[in-house]
Image 1: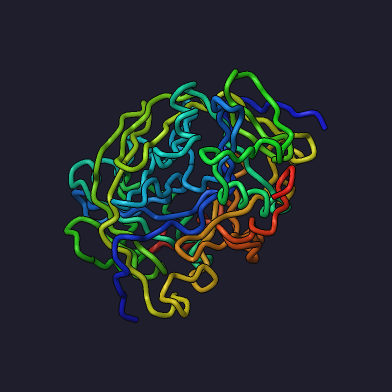
Image 2: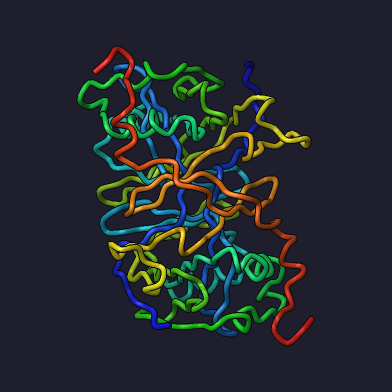
Amino acid sequence: MPRIDLGAQGFIYPMPMTLIGADLDSGPNFMPVAWVNRVQPNPPRIATGMGKAHATNAGIREHGQFSVNLPSVDMVAVTDWCGLVSANRGAEKAAAFDVVRGTLEHAPMIAECPLSLECRIHEIIDLGSHELFIADIVATWTEERYLDDAGRPDIEKMRPFTLTMPDNRYWAVGEQVGGAWSTGRSFEPPGGR
Amino acid sequence: MPRIDLGAQGFIYPMPMTLIGADLDSGPNFMPVAWVNRVQPNPPRIATGMGKAHATNAGIREHGQFSVNLPSVDMVAVTDWCGLVSANRGAEKAAAFDVVRGTLEHAPMIAECPLSLECRIHEIIDLGSHELFIADIVATWTEERYLDDAGRPDIEKMRPFTLTMPDNRYWAVGEQVGGAWSTGRSFEPPGGR
């Protein structure tokens, strides 16, 4: 079938939904962010693109520290609410959560989230309207009940959710469809093995 | 319940699964990449962290162009196979696909993928073992059959899949659990409205 070009506003499908935590002058604050991912194995690093005008950005720039919290599907409404109100206009979003601290001084985390990463800024790249925070992961906080038998976080127990844009919908995670560095062994390559 | 620290090797759950296409001296090549996401609305930009030693990285550095292709769940085996073999060791991965071109000279795309982004390098950041490719989206290729009534890509028709690490499993997308900038309107904030 013919392919069509929708233009430059393409997205990745789907994007992981997180709440990024930072300390502002007014206290801890949390902002929904789906534009975040790992970018390096060692030292373990993530990157996230966030609009410069956000109160959260100012907090991250000031302290060089933040958290990435993964909410469960039970937290869709409160997560989305955090994106409808703004600390710049006086919203006290931290009051909606049990805020906990780990090893960093300025990486407030959400106890209700099944998994939280504490992060320290490595480098900030100016993109224009947004800045890219490249950060080292310092700690990964979870609870025993979210782990599998091998001690790894189990997505079926954590039940995170994802976002699609520009249709702006949230999605649960579905069934397992394969194993990485595994399922491909059964693929018959062109020209044979 | 008590929170435990799993250390610095934390991940984001789940990560979108893509095949990144680039032109090598030997021809077009495709590599599975889950560490990619949008980072800015305008100009529309993505970022992806990829190990410098990969043949694909060399192709991107040389031409400053690449594609991001989203395979469907029907393509799990071939996608995973692309990560088990290497162009550096002679694998001809492009032979497994119908390779198509768009507006850029060096952004080979996979016709079988429901959606492909053509990208042009904006900036390359050296992270250590990996490099971060920050790129402008130039075009978004899909087919009519993957669009919703409003002309937007429909994830239920495209059926992409995601990756979790370090357990290395692939996951389909589940049911819709809410609307962004919408579901939060029903949330009762702490202290009332």
